[in-house]
Image (cartoon, rainbow, N blue to C red):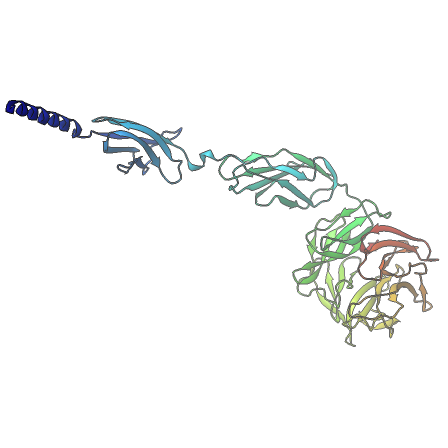
Amino acid sequence: MKIFYSILVCITLYSIMSCSEDTIELEGLGAVKGKVVAVNTNEPLENVKISTNPSTSTVFSDKDGNYVIENIPTGDYSISAQREGLLAEFEAISVLTDKTLEVVFEMDVETAANRPPNAAKLVTPPDNATDQPVEVQLIWSGSDPDKEDVLEYTLSLRNDQNDTVAYFEEIKDTTYTVTGLIYGAKYFWQVTTTDAINDPVNSETFAFTIATASNNRIVFSRLVEGNSVIYSVDEAGENPIRLTSLSKNSFRPRRNVQNGKIAYLQSVGSQVHLFTMSLDGSNQKQITSQVPVVGFNLEEVDFSWDQNGAKLLYPNQDKLYEINNDGSGLAERFQTTNGNVITEIDVYEAGDITALKTNNLEGYNVEIFTIDASGTVLTTVVSGVAGAAGGINLSVGGNLLLFSRDVSAFESSSYRQLDTRLFVYNFADSTTTDISSDKPAGTNDLDARFSPNEVSVILTNTSNDGLSMKNIQTLAIQGGSARTSIIENASMPDWE
C-alpha cells in the first residue's frame, strides 16, 4: 500500500510541473519601420508622428522621411501617421516575433478631400438683355458643397467696341456695379469662383446691350429705394435713361445746351454739392468743395447756369456764389441784407439779369426779385405775402418770370402747401397771370419751367397731403386748359 501511494504522488507532481512550463513561455517582440512620403511626388516628409493602437511607442519621421518603432509585442495593431496640414493615414498590421514589418505612408494635404465650388449662376441682367443704362448692377449666386469654404469672385467684362477686358477681383459679395459703360455697346460678362483650395471655376457667359445714346431734352428726379436718382426722357416722356447712380442721392438737374452738360445737386456725406455730367450721364464731376450748397430746405434749393454754361450760381444761406464749371474761380456775388436766406436763382444772360427767391429760415416771408450785375435790385415781383412761393424761371427773352405761390397763404412748421398755383409775371406791364386755372382741387403745381418754345410749361403736380406720388405734367400757357401728364413718380423737371 505504501508503495502505491508513493507512485501516485510522483505522477501528480510530474503533471503539475509539466503544466507550469507551458504557461510561462516569454511573449515575442517585433518591429515596424518604413518611410513617409508625399502622395504623387514621393517627396520625403519630416516630423510626421507615427504611433500604434494599442499604444506602444511614438516616433517621428526624420528628414529623409524614415521611421522605426522597435520592441513591439507581437499582435495586431493599427499604425497611424499624422502631421498638421496633412490627412492622417492608418494601416492595419500584425507584428511577429523577431520580425521587422515595413510600412510606407503616402500622405496628402488636409484639403485633398475638399470639393471645388459650384459654378456661379448669373442672375441679372438676364442673358441678352437690352436697353441697359450706362451703370449696370450685375448679380449672381454662388455656392460650395463644403459649406465652411469662403468664396471669392472675379468678374470679367468685355465689349464689342474694343479689345479691352476689365477684371474686377477679390469680390466677396454676389453683386457688383459697373459704371461708365459705352452707349450702344454689347457687353459680355463672366464670373469666376474660387475657394482658395481648388482650381477656380468659371460660370457661363451672359451678354447685355447698353441703350443707344439719345438727346433726351427732359431731365428729372425720381425717388428710388430712398435715393433721388436723375433720369432723362424725350418730349413725350418716353425712352427713359437713368443718368446717376442708384446708390447716390442726386437731384435738381439743370441742362445746358451750349456746353452739353447737366448740372445737379448730390449729397456728399452731410453736405450737398454741385456736380456736372455729360448729357448721357458720363463724365460726372464734383464742382463745389469749399463752400457747399446750403438753404433752409435742400428739397427747395435751386441754382442756375450762367455765361452760356461757363459758370454756375448757387446759394449758401444768405450769400450768392459763382463758380466756374471746372470748380475754379469761387467768388461771392451777392448777399441779402434783411436776414433772409437765398433759396432759388435763375439767370437771363442776354440782359445780365438774375432772379432770386429769398425767405426766412421757415421758408416764409418770401421775396422774389431781380438784380443786375452789381447787385442792385431792379424789380420786386413778390413781397409781403403769406405762404410759400418759389419755382422761379425767366423766359428766354427775359420779359417774363414764371413762379408758383400758395394762394391759401397757409404756413406751418412742415412747410406744407395747400393750393400752390403757377403765375407768369410780365415785366413790361407789371401784370401777373394765373395759368393753373384747371389745376385739380387738392393739388399743388410746383417746380415749373418754360418749355423751349415757351408755348407751355413743364411742372410737378401732386396732392397737397405732402405724401402722395408726384407726377410731371405739361401745361399750355395760353388758356391753361391743355394739361397732360407725361411722367409718373417724378419731380424737379427741366426742359431745354
